[in-house]
Image 1: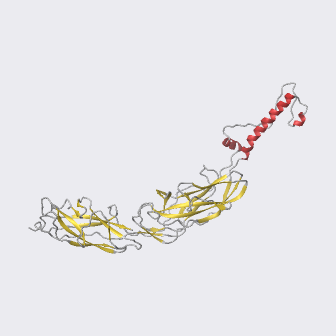
Image 2 (image 1 turned 60 degrees about the vertical axis):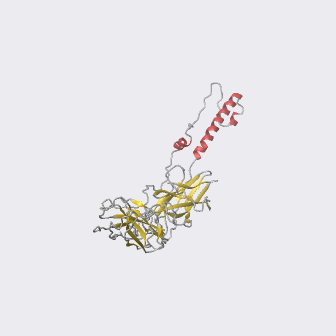
Image 3 (image 1 turned 135 degrees about the horizontal axis):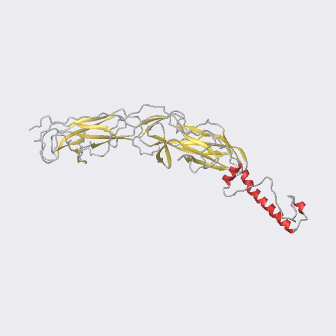
Length: 439
């Protein structure tokens, strides 16, 4: 007996690699600049402090009190002392001892006071806010969709000098300055030991390196890509004056590389997109700085996510009779269908596909490409087998190469498969998920 109206609709959904329904394409290009954190840090100089506050800050455990008119009272029948030792040439031994004690006390007091009154921090002034940031170029970059998170997408750009005379500082011998740098909006991901920061293009981040210029030379760094900018106020260099110096020029240069930190949808970075803030500090543990500069990237690179487009495919199965599928392992007639892969981005290296049972559909035999029927089906004891055009089973959960890097067609076949148990006629529906991988 034939089962009237027996058919299968195989819904092949084009989805992401994690089997969630996605639509792939190139997002509209945008010129949205990378957001800059709200930092209310205007240029300022630390306020001048009265001398007694400086003394208290620098020598918290010593308190010195000097009267404007020091007086020494002597017991009766003793001679008064002059501050000039020549006037006391004829004094007795006891008097000379008193004089020596007094002069010793004064020498100690002034010795302690001298470094306190002369202590100061270096002073710096910003000379310019105009300069070149790291160069990203204006090329179109094709982003591999399935590259791992943290993959470096471009090489580091050449070291680009913002300037060698961005700040000028004056020092007393032994005073120091700290050149620091911060990136914008960290992603929380690291790439080769460097923090990845966001851009305005989803999934595309950047890493920074910096090098300082002080006095007359670039300060050596352990890596050619400079000091990694991994945190707020990353110290690029600390420089201490070997002697009293004035108008010492300080500058920096930077490099940048692009890194994947999520799915890449595509887009464009605007010229001078903000990527970092550089500051000079005259005290290592203070947030205040002597003039900051914002670094904007040079160029307008475009990013294209690697992907193709397709539509859901409905397959009408060939009618089969339960009498033709009596023995477990017997198969019905095959129904041919094609999966069209279209609108692929240029630059693809390869296109691969994988088949998996749709949610709620059991896998009967993954190696042979056999899935069960949907619970709503009336037929029992049957499944669906998917093969290629040569009737070779397409194993479930494995990627197969299409041997193409552009638009292509994947020819497949589907047929009923007798699984065993009691056979019942009725509708026989099922569904599979088709996943794509681009490289």
